[in-house]
Amino acid sequence: MAPSTQKMLCLPEAGKPWKLYTEWPVPTLGPNDLLVKIVSAALNPAEWRIQEGFVGVSRLVKNWPYIGGLDGAGIVEEVGSAVTTFAKGDKVIAPGGFEQEHATFQEYNVIAAVDAAKIPENTSFDQAATLPLALSTVASGIWAHEPGSRSVNFPAPWEEGGSTKFAGKAAFIVGGAGSMGQMAIQFARLGGFSPIITTASLHNADYLKSLGTTHIVDRTLPDATILAELPKLTGGKPVVYAFDAVGSEANQELAYAAVAPGGAVVTVMPAAEAALKEKVQRDGSAKAVGVCFGDLRIPPHRKLGAELYGRLTEWLEKGLIVPNRVEVIPGGLLGIPEGCDRIKHNKVSGVKLVVHPQETE
Ligand SMILES: NC(=O)c1ccc[n+]([C@@H]2O[C@H](COP(=O)([O-])OP(=O)(O)OC[C@H]3O[C@@H](n4cnc5c(N)ncnc54)[C@H](OP(=O)(O)O)[C@@H]3O)[C@@H](O)[C@H]2O)c1
Image 1 (cartoon, rainbow, N blue to C red):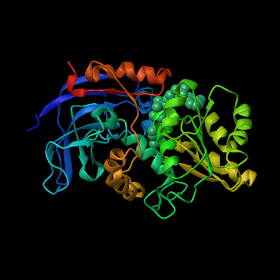
Image 2: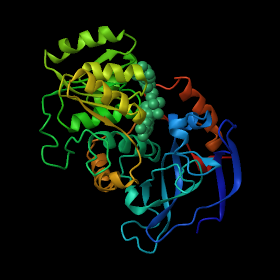
Image 3: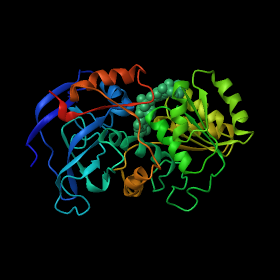
């Protein structure tokens, strides 16, 4: 039986420091839900941006105090009365969210059973916690097809043409070393793209090659130099797909410029959609524009979410996708403010920061 109260870390309001609550109510579950004891929670750039009041992401906060945590993994503590697919004690990947009950910077969260996947033997809680947001974000920009989705509508691996339509075509991932970048590389590999070129710090080269990148370009080179390298690396083949995994205007420009007319460009920054589409109108390049929104609970992503989570355990077991490398920050939830600060100042490279909420003193 779960306790009735728990520890959680929140922003009481934008601009205020993180605050630990020690007797916050444990969320209650509905018939289709799981109550998960969070063993590991991963940090994302959204958390420091919300603290600083960035409008784009702050408007997603449903209620204050804002309990952070968009990624988690843990053990099923209670099962809703209508759930037949999970049992108490199962190890699960537990997506977080902007709603207080879903957030993972707390000892327990509630998620719908359809939003969870079992963690296979070859994956630790820390590794599993790195997956949900990257998985949903990148997939939403390329594989979501339902009305209202904003993807470039590539066939997903489980759909016809999913691994053949783009076989042997060149892809370019801007910023392959981040969480989004690592997932974008792996999804491009599943789609059959080749070569897969990415910009990153060169010390991440071997690791990114192990995920499926064929060529790494030093991300500190001027854009003109990077663009001039591409045809040499593709052997003259056009780049038909570019993914901006960083989100700044400069990186969107680079991704856009790399793609040949008629190709597809996707960005992790939804607010860039209008500007990119205007560009296409102006230059008549017929490029498709897709944007990511990493919430699988919205109606346009529901079907995609069920497809992904239905396969996630098997994909991990077979090594078809690999979670991020992790660094565990000590101190439980109290380690989060320092971790957010490191992410904000670009002091994290090629690993994802995770905390263990149960170890909070
Ligand atoms: N739309 C959505 O729903 C959604 C969801 C999640 C995230 N996002 C956004 O996606 C972006 C990436 O998130 P993330 O979690 O992947 O971040 P992250 O893991 O913190 O990314 C860090 C990495 O970014 C790389 N990087 C930074 N500047 C770069 C540049 N100019 N060129 C190439 N690489 C660069 C660094 O690579 P090196 O180490 O190689 O230097 C670093 O390792 C953020 O802007 C985030 O807000 C959007």
